[in-house]
Image (cartoon, rainbow, N blue to C red):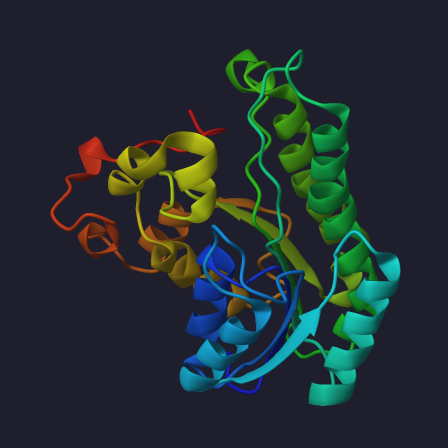
Length: 276
């Protein structure tokens, strides 16, 4: 199974992991609609929804850039209708948009707490829900959320409670949708990497250039997402998946090519949060 002719609706995706997933799908000839806020260049971050769309076209896919905010239900409804109108349906929803703030509870502003809840949890739920009636008509419908397994170790629960709630909320929403719409054949899974990924989030929120050097490239996430999204939806759902495990199951044994700094041994890569 390939993603040729399939239509993906993604939140975010102007850069980083979301764009890498979009480009991997575009290589098959997929249609990718991106709902993102970045209409004009950001002073610190590369890419806009428009540059992402052009990159998708250059990679062999069709693109629909949609400027909007996943926190706004009207924007979500419009994105779903525009995607259906442009491509005739929706086969896949990728919940990529996410906000990160690892502040401890006493240091986390209420505004940032609310932002993480609105984008990560509410956005995941509303975008997925809005697409469900159309996904029901797809041949192999999938919802994929970029969020971690529910690890209830006190190490993670207490490390950054506000962010943990937001990411676990994404996962719980996804698992709930998997159970609720299993009879309709809609798969809903989450995917999370074992190591940090060289993205703007890692550079600006975790550890700067030093952390970037000991991370893997977004392509490893994209390749794992591709494996998930091409599996039979009725047989592969309700799982909290790990990027490296998915690739190993598909026959990949050497991850050296994914090192952000070529030649970096796996043992020196920085482990991502939420995984023991």
